[in-house]
Length: 411
Image (cartoon, rainbow, N blue to C red):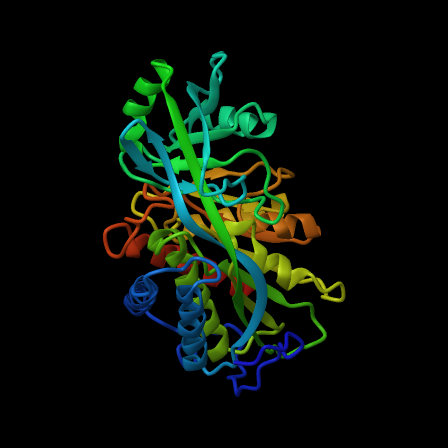
C-alpha cells in the first residue's frame, strides 16, 4: 500500500452503471450479503487485538487492505505517530489484597512507588480520603458525572473506578480516552465489577490503600486505510464513508458491523460506478480521542465532501437499540424512512444541533452534512465482545441494505 495521501484516486476499471445493482458484486441477494457480513466480522474477530499502535492494529490494516484489493481497488495507508502507553504495574493494594486494573489513558499516572491515602467514596466528606472510589459506565447513572467532576477538581491523589457498563455483563470494560492528547487530573484506575462490594466495604472502614498506575511511553505508528472510487463526474464533491478500525480489545459487535457495511458499500461502488467519487476511510485511534480521523482531516486544503456516512459503534450487536444522528432534518428523516423501509427500527435520535457521538462529532465540527448510525451493546468495550455470541447478522444485513440504498442515492 502507498502512504501518500495525495494519491487518493484509484486506477480501476469499473462498470458504467451508477448504482444499478448490476455488474460484478453489484446486486447481491440478501443471503449473499448476509454471508459477506458474517465472513467480514469473523475475519475481524480472528485478529486478537485492535488497540491503536499495536501489532494487532497493523494486522488490521493489512487485512482490510487485502479486502479492498479483492474488490478491485487500490488501498492507501495513512500512517501517523503516537506515544503509546505501556502498562507496567497498575493496581490497588489494601493490606494484603491486590486488585489489578487499567488506568484511564487520558488521566494522570504514578511512578512505580504509587500514591498512598485513605479510601473514601466520591462525593462523601472524609478528611483522610486521599483516594476516591467511584464508578463509571452506561449502568453507573450519576456516578459517571460524579467521577468526571472529581477528575477535574484535583481533590484526590488518585481514584479507583468500577467499570459498570451493563448490569448483565460482569468484568472490566474500559472507558475511552477522549483527552488522550491532553491528559488531565489524577490517576484513575479502572477495575472490574466483582470488586465493587469489597471497595465499598474498605472505603466505609476508612482503610488506607496504595494506587499504582505506572505507565511508560513508547513511540508507535498507527494507520488509517482509505481509497477512492472514481465517479463519472470528478467535478462533483465526493461522498465520504468513515468507520473506525481500532478498539480496546477485539470488540467484534462494537466495530465489526461498521467494518462489514463499509466493505459492502465499497464492493457495491467498485462494481457499479457512481456519479460522484466515493471516498472510504477506516480510521485508527478511535478509543484515543479519534486520533486517526483528526490526522486525516488535518491538511487545510482538503475539499469538503458532498455528504458523509458515519458507520459508528454497536449496531451489529444482539438486541442493539439503534441511534440515528444527522446534520439536518432532511437527512435525518430520509435516513429514518429508509431504515424503516428495510425493517430497521430507530430507537433514539440525537437532537438536531447537538454535538453527536463517535466520529460524527468531527464532521459536525467541520460544518459538513452527515448521517451517522450507532447502537447499544451490553458487551460495550468488554473483552467478551466476540463472534458469534454478540452479533446479530440478520439485523446487520437489514442495516446494510438500508445504508446501501442511502449511499446509492447520494453517490
